[in-house]
Length: 434
Image 1: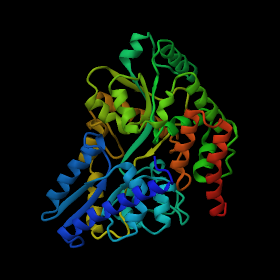
Image 2: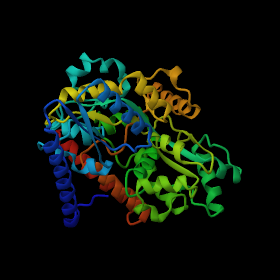
Image 3: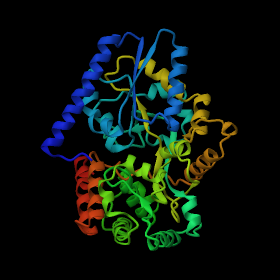
Image 4: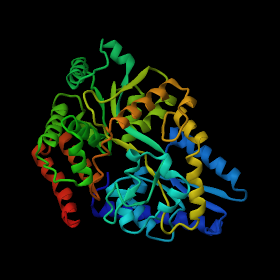
């Protein structure tokens, strides 16, 4: 987690310098801007569904562009999240980059003039036809960087959503069935606690814990709450029934032992590995883990279910391909996006544990992948995608990480945490004149 301390700032600046030097070295070597090198950044794991599909897309791109080389530079999610603004506001920007979607990230960069307007390309190349209206929300941003209208600044080519992963063997051992209501879910977690098993694998130092908080808010929410929170349709009451229930219930889950108190310092990677090792029976996180779990879990049977009782779920179109304003080979970047939208790549994405947006349904033959995609389609068709809790305001990711850590540590009451997360949200609205 990034904290605004002097030492952390130094570390961040060192990271930026390292990224810039790496980029300088690449430019010096390949003479970037001559149409013969596509510099690409993304942070998907090599064994993930997206990593598998993008690797194949790179091969097909090079095969269809003789004499052109793709220089893929793997970056960490946090590395790009924290430093993208500085890098993209320089001549060291890549030609194409995977970036997080939402007001606080892609929206902010578009407002700052750091991303290329893709509206013309989206129309000319048919991306606007392949990406449905519900998923297109995160592609477009207005002059204030608010998603849902305006120009295209990013292209998503997969979907994602948060679900509950569970260890079928541990459920069977404790005579538990898949819960269909929140009451049944908490009863199952009570059974594990009684057996001295902590139910939930949680990463409180990064994004996972705040997504649990948001799931709990959505248990008391409707679409109007999501529109108010994410799209600023109306003012949000942070002490209203949705967020009050979420904060109080999250704190209660810690007290009851559903969430380990040491999870405040656990990162997402360690959370996922602990689930893979069978240490915890349940993990609440996104579909981006699906392909990896399918490839790496060998010692037990696992499955998924939607957060019990919810009609709304954290989720959206996947991360965006964006083309930096300072990119030197924009046409090559557009061509690469085209290839990732091909049915062959989309089908591979689907059969590797991802959620494609333009696949041939009959070509998805893997049973687990079919289940994953069917659940996403079920949510999407019911207007059940509620985006993510950190999207509304710049810097809000860190605010929410700190908030859930305080709930886990019991260093602040739920009411105090709600006050803390409300302030930057309201300050952002004020800065926008809303």
